[in-house]
Image 1: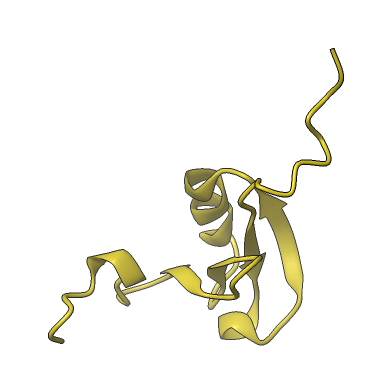
Image 2 (image 1 turned 90 degrees about the horizontal axis):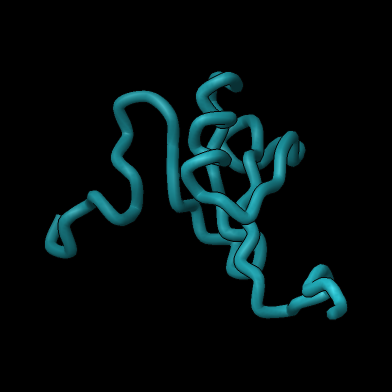
Length: 71
C-alpha cells in the first residue's frame, strides 16, 4: 500500500512570526501542536496554510473560533 504523503486534502497549519507578517518557523497537520509551538515565539500566530486565515494568536487575543459573531 502506498503512502498518502501527496494528499492534497491534508490541512496544514503554519506558525508565523511577527503577527503573521514574518517568516514561517513551523508547519504541522495538527492545530494543537502548532498552537503549542507558537507559544515559544512571542507575537506569533497560527494560520491555515491553504486559506491564510489566522486560527490562533498568542497572548490575550482570542482565537478566531472563540470570537462571538456579533463582536
